[in-house]
Image (tube, rainbow, N blue to C red):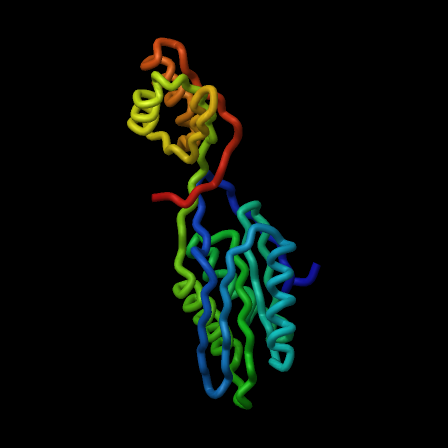
Length: 218
């Protein structure tokens, strides 16, 4: 595997930071134009698709350098013909230092006729990545447990208020023969939430954990 296309590993936690949206930037250094783009992605396939799209858009540029970091630990970068270590890696370090994952960054360079040297290139590429990330903004995602609660109508009010006071978030409510609450509880809190609902309903109501979900934190 080439050094310009390296896979690493990052730890997986119950909280992660990712771009809040798409961010763009432009840096001009000694007549060279650096166009930065940051995009949130959730897979290598999505990252590769974005990289291919940018390369097609800026097909006449001298270089389209890129990097991506995913929550599963995958990270790759490419200098795309720039001196080794002068583009993709400095860009990647911006996201490593910021603890940003599920991100793809592409910086396009239109050569201005003046050589910048390895140090100048590193600064320009990393600055374009930083500014694009700042333009995108960042969001903190937290892992929640999805809890399904079936409740008789006469207990609707007390179950809803008890769930919310116990830290649960009502994501959806279905009204049928009974009321079905779809709740979110911070990871590890579903057991305590279910206990509270069982207690206040004298054992009539309890919740079932149906899965997990990443949600933008408060």
